Image 1 (cartoon, one colour):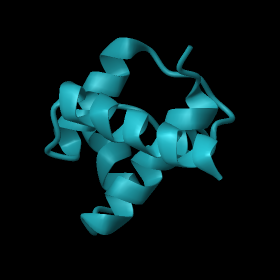
Image 2: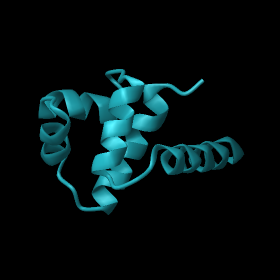
Image 3: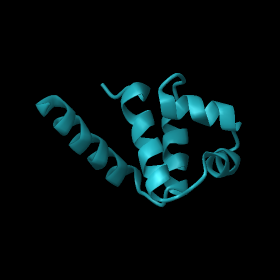
Image 4: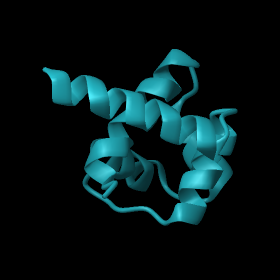
Length: 79
């Protein structure tokens, strides 16, 4: 089962790598910056629809996002 605690930090990492401000994503998807921060830190759950919108803002398909998440999960399990 994918939980926000597992994919929220991946959103944060990808956003930083792409040099996109959290406030920009929050504004584009129609939520407050505080709410978006809670998503990235795993303190707030998010709908699948919103996951898709965040992926759009990161210029990433949801399929590619899930593949990255799976790769990260495998690496985490090996440690």
